[in-house]
Length: 239
Image (cartoon, helix red, strand yellow):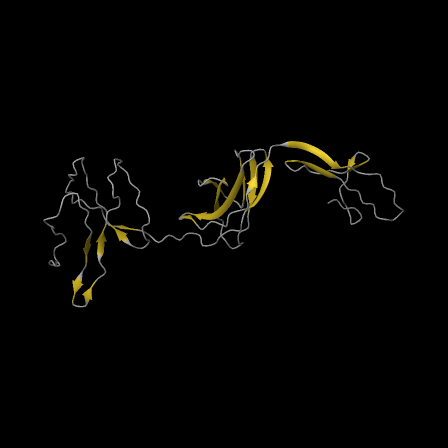
């Protein structure tokens, strides 16, 4: 159907009740046809809520919306109230993807996470997403540095983590997912290999070794004559 260019509305008659229709409008001049303006239903089934989220809109394209009311008999309103045209802005989301996060278990229900970002990224914020390995639902936390602590995790559960840069426009691309990390129950340090008495000649190298287990991983502190050994030169090394 073709109507006068001065008209911005048109009544289509003889439509069937309870039938979905798609309507497209195209502008015409001596140079040809424009791309059509397409009208489509957002939801195929009526919703009882007074709020509805429309997804998968394209940036840089204008949209108009209209709401119709239906009842149980399939009768609907004939509202011609259309929203003011909405232009979806082109958002300048972060384009840099952080490295895969490094995970350190720090307690029976907590981990610390750190990752690498380019130095030229200006003062970014970050979103860390995590979930149990068997779940499809991601939890998110926000932090202002490339270091974050997450509490409230469950023992004997494996978690995976990923991170993205965030700015005022939203969240950029997430990094690759980390390897699964299992939160193990706490256990006190246990000596697996104790220090043995060793005799060496003068000026020879003396090497002492011991091993511990425990969770979180215990720290080793070396003492000599009751004082902690702190290397002050190349003659002493603690590793």
